[in-house]
Length: 231
Image (cartoon, rainbow, N blue to C red):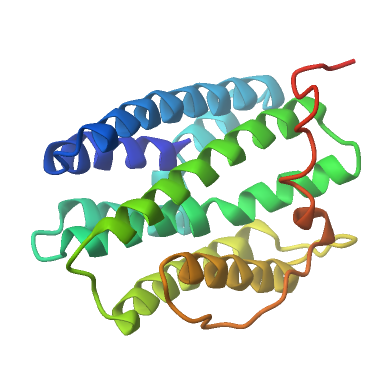
């Protein structure tokens, strides 16, 4: 939820003011609305699942209370406030926020779905992950339209930076190994996702990792038919 707020901060403070293309500004308007819906959904989920008020406050203030979350937030915020980073570099950084920073958490929740657990959480996650995928795709599309692009080495360095931070987060978030889901597999998955993003940004794969989660291969195919029909 905190990440969605930071994404909106960037859209309102920088991208919406810097980008003059009408269609892009239109998309950013939709994206801001979507991120607000995501934040509201996460708040409702925490309210529903966490009964203890102290634990609830702890999670609502994750940027202050959890170092691994703070690192992700600080990384994104430094790009928002940067006076030296080019627009292209900031587009790449926020493609990484949408495409790398969210992917581990999404995969963990899809793992619950595979086991038929917590249907409310997994269904909302399905919708939110689809939105974030769209936002990441749009960032890549914007990048393709830019005339002045950073070098492939610079692009790879930005994505690699995001991967290191996300791996640190997952080490703390997944301290216990479960059936088909553990920290090492998740790190491999993050590398796989990062490579996929690099290819979208016209760069060669850097990590060359395979997808360790078979259930993530079919996500885009599932749920397309009668998506909102629920028993």
